[in-house]
Image (cartoon, rainbow, N blue to C red; front, side, top):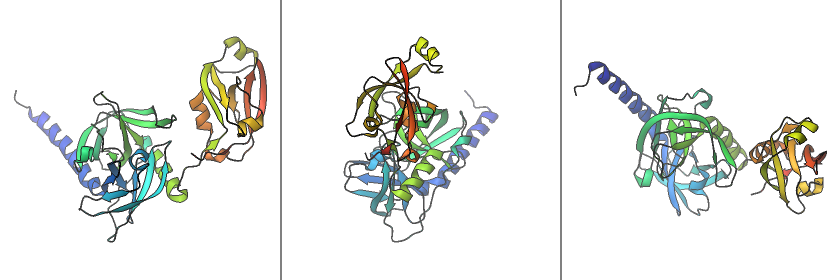
Length: 311
């Protein structure tokens, strides 16, 4: 079947968009090698700061970064956050400055726009795949059990080794950090939105970690009987059932008990475990905070003082 001229023009336009984006960002994509495998990284600064995934560099005693120009050097861990699956390393370079990538404002990402992934799948250097943004605002449970939120879903093909590499738009700006693919599904891949990555990377560079608070409760999401919600004037359908409490924890000191159902924290509705996790930010550390529970049908308000999560 003969290609119509307008189809050929469209193909050329798409090809130019992909190739120009690759030209802009490819020099800022590093290969990350560790003693447990490897992945990809995004050069953030001329002096060698590189953003990658936590799972790429975690538990590795040796990390090395390689640039597209062939330079290879040790990379020292600056900070890592298992809950967001992001980490920052610094490549020890003797000839800076390095070419850097630009992190876009991912709030402008739209479903259907071109999405281009660059990385090192299975060790094949600087492999480019392209597709579209399939969805935005996705959530995926990470290795720690917490949700990683505000993910970009794409059908650009990802494979082991792409982790930590950039997902870019047609201008070459980074809109996400490639982090996961669903196997054995095809065309179902996820990237951490660049706005989230920018915030986390900034904290890792500044503090070496991302602070989160801890109260010492293990719980599960359970439905709250409608009659009980109505009786206590609660606009909720679910809460967090306290299954266990760590000894000597803030929750124990506050008087929380097994079987309590947490329905609000800091006067914000707690509709489930993930909603409670979202409330446990670094800003809560050391701050007396009201937690409302249902206990044997009664509503009680307790004061908990979260401490810093250390693992």
